[in-house]
Amino acid sequence: MSKHFVIRLSAAALVAGSVLGVAGLAAAQDQTAIYSQYHQAIRAAEACREMTLDPAAWSKVSTYIDKKINYEIPAGERLTLIEAAKTDTRELVWNKGCDSDEVKALLSLYDAELANPAM
Image (cartoon, rainbow, N blue to C red; front, side, top):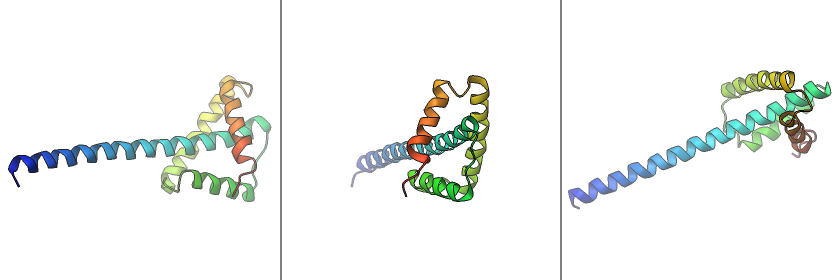
């Protein structure tokens, strides 16, 4: 095997690894965004509809969300995302109101997927 061939093969492997790494990062960011959006939807429903989820409902929605993200987000990161979702949604509802397009989109997501999650 020539030295040039080995160098080209190594370079190709490096490029392929970089592309896969970027794809993996993008997938992780997508999972994070999905997870956050579901929790924002729950918080919007709680704020705008003056409702609370009981422990059984939380268990159902948590399992549903976990399945949607393929259980790929570690517990510590989940807690951080949940707290951020609480804050972001509270500010969104406070500043724009429950009739804003952004909040209506979250409420639609809640109604479509989280109000009665399919297990």
